[in-house]
Length: 209
Image 1 (cartoon, rainbow, N blue to C red):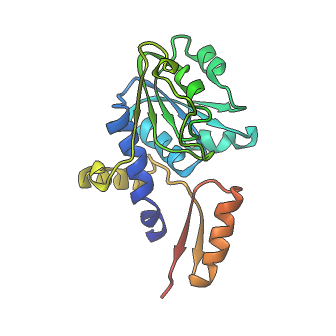
Image 2: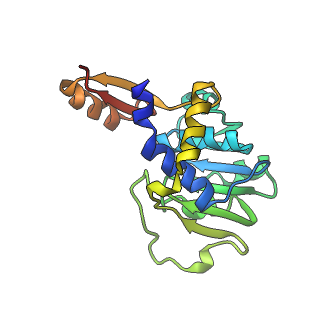
């Protein structure tokens, strides 16, 4: 359906680029997604599972753990601001890779979840904090790599996008579409739903004939 296709490009490009260009994620590795119920977080989970990774993902509300599981997440985690201990209980050596979507307010904690020679990719700041006051490189644990991803359309090649479309059609990938709104008169309602944050996923406005 067009409402599914319309939700894909930027969301999937950001998620796919973060996992590949940013983290070089491989089959068999473990991935932590910080900010898992965001559209990029949900997309990253489905793509990572398709790549063959084990996925840990966070939510601030235990009530949303089911949404993470529906996206393929193996280990939903409730995030109270510090999750390093939870992650280390599951993965004592740390995860191979972490996707940071919450922002710099929790980035130091995210860095502590990653194994030696693992990588953290900073892609978003859902909490609104893009910088760390008085930052020093020594805040990064020894041997842990920190990178960022901004991305561009070419990071999602046409053949990869086509593969994702086929996987969606086959039911192997899930697209986090929260709600479909019909007509320009519903744009205001769509924006209100986005700002409320009560329904994770993309809100798509379809202009009917």
